Amino acid sequence: MEKKETKMQIPKITLDSLFTTQEQRDEAKLEKVIDININDIDDFPKHPFKVMDNEEMQNMKNSIIENGVLVPVLVRQKNDGRYEMISGHRRKFASQLAEKETIPCIVRNLSDDEATIIMVDSNMQREEILPSEKAFAYKMKLEALSHQGKRNDLTLSQVGTKLRTDEKIGEDYGDSRNQVQRYIRLTRLIPELLELVDNEIIKSPDKMRMALSPAVELSFLTEEEQYWVLDNIDQYVATPSHAQAIKMKKLSQNGELTQEIVEDMMCEEKPNQVAKLKLNEERIRSVLPKNVGNTKIEDFVVKAIEYYSRHLKQREMDSRWCIATFH
Image 1: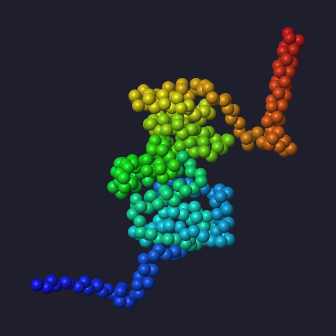
Image 2 (image 1 turned 90 degrees about the vertical axis):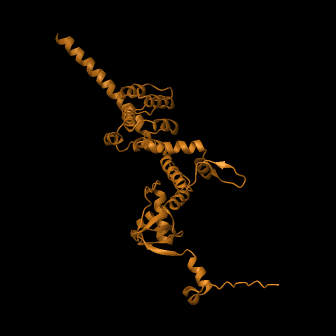
Image 3 (image 1 turned 120 degrees about the horizontal axis):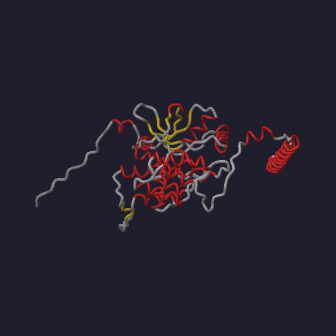
């Protein structure tokens, strides 16, 4: 019987294996936390999440002053040797407010699309996300998934269940596929109109607000047409109703929307519209007695108007009496 020769696999010997232990090689593969100069870290391109110097930011700054940055930020190194922030923009800003020179970082080798997905996922964990932030975040993640070669009919399970990319994004963040697309539509709004949608979430009493539904319809208008709408919002101190926005969209798609039509529609009184009076608070306070508190301003102004009205009426009566007497 002929014997079959077997070849032995000789392990490849490298300089690394000669001069380092397996434990050292395993440790080298682990991500390490290193301190990097804050000035060497650039923000993520077109970062959609706002970093605001508010009360929460001040609390973060004070915590960093007392305890340092407890959770390292995630960055990747750029071709020019600088770094790009992936997750940790708010911690970076708070560190700058705290006058820190460095910040603890994890440096990870990521592609553009991988970096985008991680950036979006890490920021979407916040409690309050503005519509504008969600809109651009959804758009960026959708594009990143597409760039990765993932089609709109992603297979996501072993049993072959197929989901569209937008549906997968919705599942990740608790929105329906249609709602994801509605948010992405907001990225086509001019900044001034998009700000009104954010104001609806902020609930600022002294700012104009617009609901999501009419805003989505207005996103189908051209940029020029959107500015027509904005001008009339400022003029009539009212935003379009959902029905008005739908009508504008249809007229725009048919090439029939004009500036005059927008104005005619915007000046219509809507069933749920309450007339609003705009007053300059600074001007009113400048003439108020100092002892009038905030809760008494309205009563004081009403009484002052009543008194002035009586004064004007008496002056008119006196004027008529003089004319009648000397003629």
